[in-house]
Image (cartoon, rainbow over all chains, first blue to last red; front, side, top):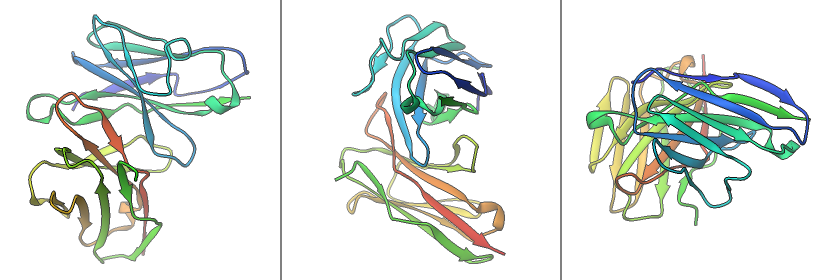
Length: 116
Length: 111
C-alpha cells in the first residue's frame, strides 16, 4: 500500500480562522478522499478529489466551508474555513489501492483539530 | 435503517477466545466489504476485504459474507490483547462509489 503523510498532525485553532491540511502520497493515485471523524464517531466522507477536476462533495459538505485542491497525482489539500468548535475533529485523507486492490482505501495518519 | 450497522458494543473476550464481530448493510446492491481496525488515537488500518459469498481467511482473521442475509462478519481466533481496538465495517456499492462506514465496535481482549 501507498505511504501517506499528513500535515499538520494536530493543531489548536481559534474560531473564525482557517486551517489547511496537506496530504502527500509516495505514489501517483487517481482518487483521493477526505474524511472527518468526530469524537467517538465513525468516519464520514467529506469529498472525493480527482486530479484535474473539481472535488465532489457529499451531502452536508460545501466547497465554501471545505475547499479542496488537487494539483497533481500525489498531493491534495483540505481547508477548513471559518472554523467553529463544531469543526473539532480528526481529518483523514485516504487513497485508493492499486490493481486488484483498487476498491480498497488506505488512510493517512490524520490531523487532529481542536477549535476553541 | 442505517446503511451499515454494527451490533452495539463494547465487546469483551478473554485472551485466546474467538471474537465475533457482526455487520449488516441495507443496500442489496453492495458489492465490496471491508474490515478496518482502529487503535485509539490512530487512523484506520485495513484488515480484510471480501467480495464473494462465503469465508475468506487470513491468519487469525476470517471474514464471512452472506449477501442473501446482507451481513458480513469478522472472526478473530486466538484473540490477543493487541487485538483490542475499534473495528469498523465498511461497504462499497459499486465501482467508484463511496466507502460507507459503520459506527464501529470496540473490542477488548482481557489477558
